[in-house]
Image (cartoon, rainbow, N blue to C red; front, side, top):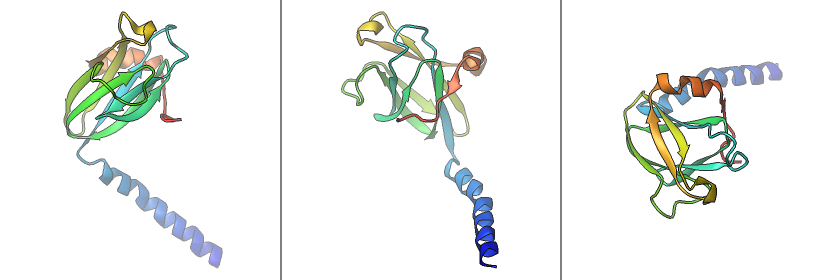
Length: 142
């Protein structure tokens, strides 16, 4: 009888867990960081930031998905630094609730020497073929 009560308790809790998560993301948008940079620097993770908070160490041929509240956000990428010291490689993005934004990371000319990146906001139709070649990275801060 005790085992039945425990099982029912877990079942009851599992039924309400998705509803609680759905309420947390109300009024939020999704931001995808997409990295498909070829063989240059493929062994090095790119450190992705939203509002100066590191959200992912993104590997090559991967993308990560992040939920952000509606409003203005600053996106950054660094090659070696795990914190933002300067505001280069920055994209300011105004996000609206319930929308999806795709950010493609493009290496700049001095990329191999710890240099620059370009963050490009792209349409879903443009990024769809790139996402097909990438895997979602869920273990972002390992």
